[in-house]
View 1 (spheres, rainbow, N blue to C red):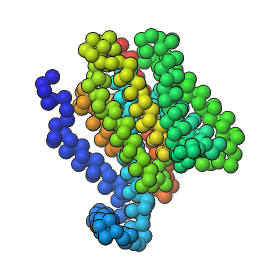
View 2: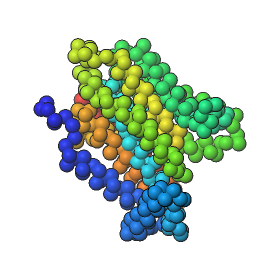
View 3: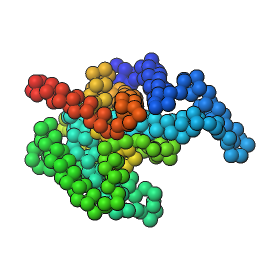
View 4: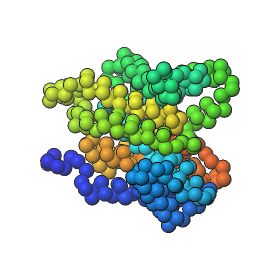
Length: 353
């Protein structure tokens, strides 16, 4: 590979950025109340100017008022921001897992990691689990811990049964683990009768009601955990040719594997704690984008970031508008889409073998 060719080119970055901005604007303008693009741009500009003026003058900013401004600034923009950041995080986690395990079907949903994170979050919601230093983040911390433990359990069992960590073994263990966690969640729900409706709605996956603080947490998580994955893009390329070969070229296999697993668990856990169990995002987008960018993770990881954001924003838009004025959970849309793609990928993999 020639120097400089393993990274995204500037035109490709620009194309992905413009497409993402376009989809973001479409999702902000479209909904039960249609807001013209001209009014959307004006209100956003006025809000940004008010924030800058308030920061400079050390006064409370006077934001645009009215029903349209309230819908746009208080509901749609924070929700679409959270949707984009969640999609980017889940897609990046899926691409990293697929590279680490050399498995095109690896994803938080298919491996059962999302189910484990969901179990942790449900336990925190049902029993009011908090942490003294972080009383507001009990659900999030518990989801991250459970996601990491779930990943270790699934890979550990798969390794015991099949040293080569074949696709069929990992998927089988993941399905069994998901069934176990679903049963445990049902048991937990029986002890939290007063919160059943909230837990049930949350487990289907939805970003309805998310706000700017949630977007800030997702952004911090993506920068911290996603940055760790990006820094090891070259090592993920080495894993593609086998762990032994990676060791021979100087890769600390154990350390890199642990860092990637922690980063993936962190991304999935934070996303699940805020948006619930939104499945198959990390399976669909990296697989599709791999056809465009190739297997090189120095190109695939940035593409997955943009692609996941665009995919989930469009899925959330479909969930909001398909049965308007009623609203579907975005997890339903992604699960239906992901299930179809999962079958196609699995059939293609079997034919290849």
